[in-house]
Image (cartoon, rainbow, N blue to C red; front, side, top):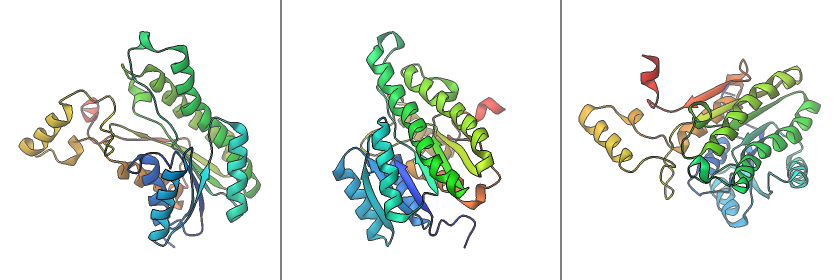
Length: 264
């Protein structure tokens, strides 16, 4: 088996039943394509059924699990369902997340709490629940989805940037705590990502057109444009595989040339 293959591994992907073309569903399909059995987790049945159907149509093995990651009882039930189906959990991808947008002074207390609850609390609740199973088997890979906003900040989504910054540091803390159990905890932080039918969150009007023009006029290539969900999914598969066995507590930022000038 290739060091990047995931044959017979069991994976949970939260947020996998969001947009049919979103990051979570792409991660679920890509893990299945690498050989993993995938539990696709979300709050709505129909999108879950679609992703599961897509995976099975390609010869993969998948189940859909309804769960709210902010509810500890629901998370415990999610773990039990996956264990009942396949007997173990090797990989957890915490991709459930989202945010509203607005100036900091316009963010309500409810907006703030809801954003941190979904992004940060959900990541923590799922990680600790699954880690208990991974401790018993003395192995596991946990991959959190952060954001470049968690490093550079976000003027129109301060609550989201704060939550993602916390996830990046939570990744390091959990990696330190669970290394003795051979549990690897890493993070993938997307930059701007174009999701079909959803646009590019927080990208100013005209910016995508400007980058397209840059690509054609200056030959900058795809790295000058926003990324796509597959870019993120590929990085997740790397962290889920044996190819990343020497890494834990890392934050891999997938952003093309978004910040390249910062290193010149």
